Image (cartoon, rainbow, N blue to C red; front, side):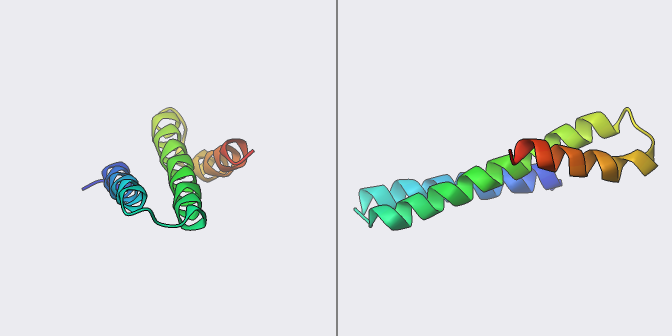
Length: 76
């Protein structure tokens, strides 16, 4: 399974966990912490997809620079 697919599977599990937490009437703080984790995971997925897409067009030596630039842009 590729990195993108692993990230999507992890996100799916996290979202199911949040749904269960809401159904079980867990505390708001706990739920919000999990939502924050999902947001961070979505940013990572976005960066991975963009890096893969753009890396196809760049020479290998520029890929690490691209990854760092995308990380900064997505985390704004």
